[in-house]
Length: 282
Image 1 (tube, rainbow, N blue to C red):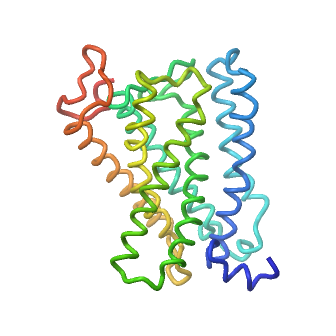
Image 2: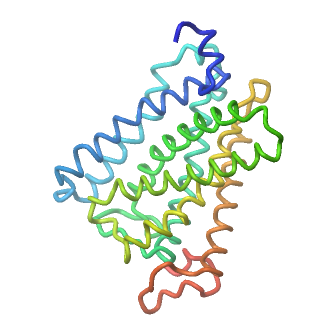
């Protein structure tokens, strides 16, 4: 890039300097935790000697720097801003809430609808391993930063089209990108034997669409945050928006559970179509 004015006119990057810096930080940070987990631990099968403590430490080493690094390596765009006005703070808060709800509550839909199970040693909360809360956080930061950049570029490309066509193109892209992310994650952990599915092929074909429902909701909602320089979000609005996205995903997943049912046969006593909420039965 030839200068700051060129960056400001980028069709990929945010107009808001703080948001631009935050998105780029999340993208450039991703190779660190991705290499640690999928480039070292999984291919060399280091996990075979892991106890609950090692699993938790790996997750903390992956997630905590996403908070600590921007606190000490302050981007130029953030130096004149109060900490609560910095985009990376807002993005971390939004994803922290959304991924927490996704783990604590919605993981049980993976158990009941997709036939998934965790079999590695772990300390758990609501029958969900603690380390998955932290790993989901950095994964979701990457997914949503990538979604922001691609969706922004798409909007620039179709800005001259009629509103109805723009809506169709955006909806199609969000659906396709959501499915791609869900499929990519599922394939990327295929060599880790302790996150199991009753039928992995069914997970690839149909389960990824179920998982994509998270992102069909969250990608466009997350994109709105601080996208317009004239509309800066307070942390309270960030929290309410993330909770709203979480509730909408919960409703959609539960409707799938009740009306479409599981994608695989479930063991006796784990009925998917029973009344109530999925996480009550564990």
